[in-house]
Image (cartoon, rainbow, N blue to C red; front, side, top):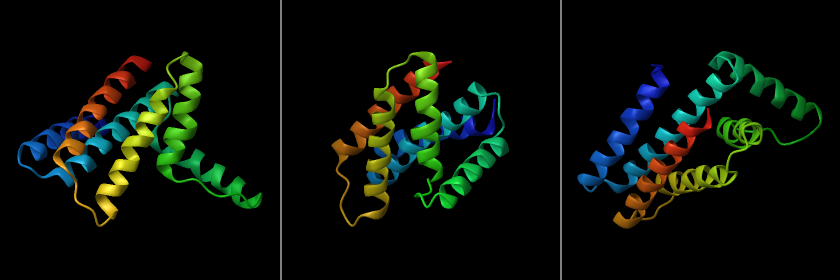
Length: 141
């Protein structure tokens, strides 16, 4: 098992433990990263690439965008918006998976960076959504 898959499993378990202990904001962080780490591993497997090759692909894409005076893309956008989109089209899967991952990312950004409380029901909903996303990712390849 890859280290990213181990981290993904640890993060989903951690999210559950954090919710049980009423630590809602960090649970959202763990819920999202469980999905992102799963996705990153899935992309590497689906394209028979290693993480260095994928990092180089992102770097080359951003170099091209800079030359064309376009906005560069961040790592999470690359995996969710570019690589997953391509994989979904290739596999004929449900495109709403991208929206779900972006929703999780939005929750994570709000939880991590905004000066707002995180309510238990939000934390639990994010955890439930992350479990569904992981199940959908498991079905892709």
